[in-house]
Length: 112
Image 1 (spheres, rainbow, N blue to C red):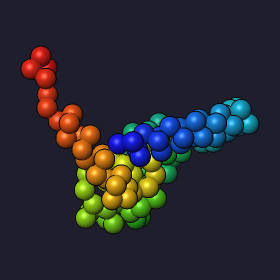
Image 2 (image 1 turned 30 degrees about the vertical axis):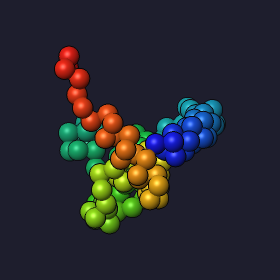
Image 3 (image 1 turned 90 degrees about the vertical axis):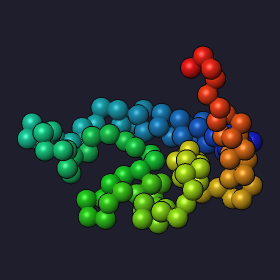
């Protein structure tokens, strides 16, 4: 899990700085006009939020961190979790560390 922690420790401040820069430069810009019909129609084609981990192409479907979900069907859940957290699939050691950490945390305490 040390590999994942280090990636997050270095990646989060970089992402925060990037977002702060965007907000400082563009905070008052309008990016979309939305009708009530669009809201009730599922917001198709309307820019309405930022999601760094995934997006849905109206034709090709769901992408997770730029990878079509159809290309992730052979991956373990732990690999997809790591991808969501870091933007990249884990190497063998990173996957092993994450699996060991999750195993240690798998037991639910009696008080829960």
